[in-house]
Image 1 (tube, rainbow, N blue to C red):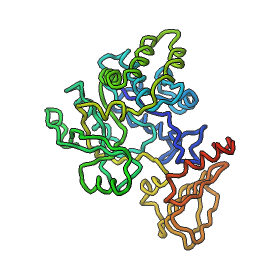
Image 2: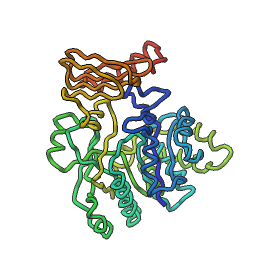
Image 3: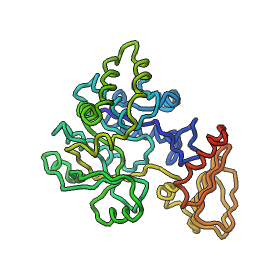
Image 4: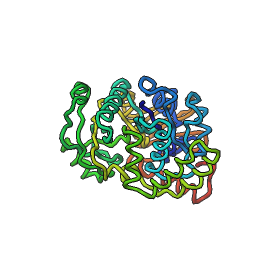
Length: 369
């Protein structure tokens, strides 16, 4: 009874100008002709039936999602009336699934990740589900072995390996560890320390647990959220369901599932992932995804034409394959051209793209948002 809940409500502001209010990050095509949301649904098909896939999103994005993944039942597209971070929205999905499928196990996963070696990914989810079946109180999180000291990801500090009948069954795939604690995005010196220690993994934001267990833990650690979700749950299937959600959900505290539950709960297990993973957080992600496509000057050119003279380490991506970019004497610059806006930024400033969004809002230049 594995159900998958795909989180598809974010905007991805650091991927401006391609990511917009009308076309959020999960609707971009990064590695294939499919959107990242379509790829997320497709990689689940071997272990989760299509009628057990749910998508959490906003009211404004729901119609676009129905068009992009029409195979998902419309009643499985759950809409947040307002953003309230991951604890309330995951609680809403868990309550809904538990209401219909009391013995269900659910996996939570973002809609905007790039994952290679999908067979290993699906096997890891199966391993996690069997660990939960073995002990329904367990909360499973997937960790990714760091390849560099990232300051953009949270970290999971692992403890001793877990030994059980299920871990022995899957020992050729990967190792299960007890979790010591979660760490928020660290400064560079701390990230270097984490990576060098060998005891830390990136937090991929992918979880597996019993729907009943996470509902109970939200009620335990965030009783006000739990009370609201319980009121909503009592109205599932009624004619007033949407009205109740629209009225009560905005009253939920804005808090992540990490802060609300994972940093407080016991019985948390991390599976070290053996598949390639990237969350496509910024445009520099393209350097990692397409490392083999850089030219002799270490420039990465995607979907366009570039003439580079005395220019190195640049990323150029455009929606017009016939547009020529002539680079002269520039290094380590990101150039992203969309239909009505172009981003030109130093790679070192990639985390500050949000400032552009803020300034566009200040100037009321809504046509570029």
